[in-house]
Length: 286
Image (cartoon, rainbow, N blue to C red; front, side, top):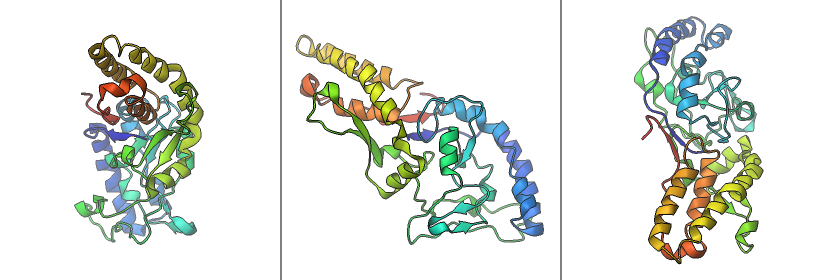
């Protein structure tokens, strides 16, 4: 998982929200969180699926696998129809009013969407954000969209910096580099919970194939240049970083982790190369 900095919401979503949220508020004021309200929570995919697909650089927001546009769902980080907490507790009142909220939406692969479902555990001892009170009237207060006080136990690619919580590391660095195997390493409770729920280590074989087929050979090419022309090697390494992390790179967190480790290995250690910038899917593109 990497940070998704996806820019301003599409105008189409603003139009859909103006219509759909107003209807949902009427239904909520009439009967609370009932079946009619739940059935009204739609219309967002047509507005955001393609923008999310392009701005996420054609990758799943969670596992980072390359995906297509068709057949992959628009995922709500905060679920729209009920939130499943720890201990089998189901919160039926949250978070319907965030159905059309731009920062609550990502495009996920079908596998990650099925694994996450409506799971939304909170950090122990913390409280969920307030639900709207009936009657709402014409408009929800701004406070209803303020998620800053809620502390989810899952990493949010739209708000968090996932590289501070997890990265890929070498399983046994006493082996020759050609035999290195990489595994996902988590360094926070939120990362561990997210990785377990979404089975983020399921891509391990694919990550190791990228290392063996692409990352290591390019490292070896640059390393061979160091003794003859260190300056050229520095330039070549910078180009290598850019090339390997260029869209549509698969598993950018893993590739970034590899580059960050390899810059201080072997012949490259003498160059004292800086750490590459952490991967971010940014829109507009720089």
